[in-house]
Image 1 (cartoon, helix red, strand yellow):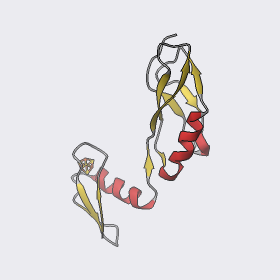
Image 2 (cartoon, rainbow, N blue to C red; image 1 turned 90 degrees about the vertical axis):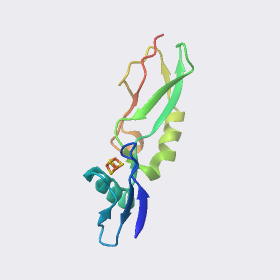
Image 3 (cartoon, helix red, strand yellow; image 1 turned 135 degrees about the vertical axis):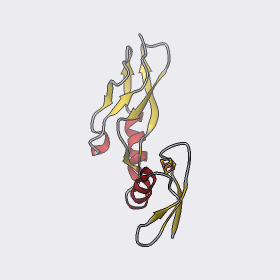
Length: 114
Ligand code: SF4
């Protein structure tokens, strides 16, 4: 029996998963889906910042456009450390395509004028 807290929504249901992958404690089906994924192949949406030149601020907030494998997060962070954007930057603008071969893009999450 494994125990984990659902992070899909702020309710934070406490769940248990037995050896046959039956999930209890979840209030909605998304919790069961999260629990099985978390115990087989955990993924996360990564939020971070990258360097910005020519803008009002020195950094631009970014995130992965979809969840990426949790074990790749350090490599994704290292890839983002190599990125320098030039203002202006638009929300949703692709910062990095196919980050670390995941097929997922990193996108800007803030509008930053020059
Ligand atoms: S199981 Fe459903 S209600 Fe509970 S935290 Fe997860 S998403 Fe929210």
